[in-house]
Length: 81
Image 1 (cartoon, helix red, strand yellow):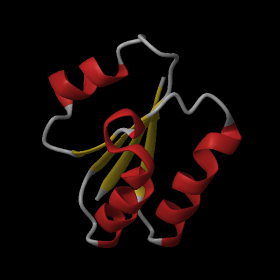
Image 2 (tube, one colour):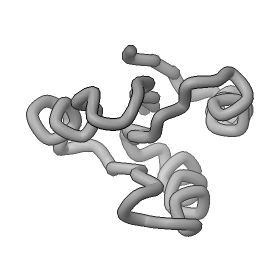
Image 3 (cartoon, one colour):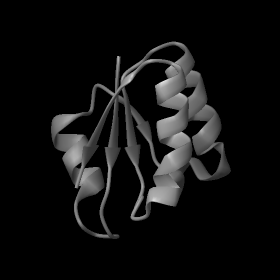
């Protein structure tokens, strides 16, 4: 199982990258999922599904909750900028 966190400003191509290269992964996108994005992420991590977190994630603080959960579940984390 792998969790990929895409990092970058709006319009930088994070969603396009997901669509072109990672479309078989579960797409966690706050723009489309709204407040449910955390619940979808948590559910995907629990079942050990491959996940892409597609948010701006520009500060360490914004990424920390995603990182903490994947660490507790012993899941490989990759970050792409």
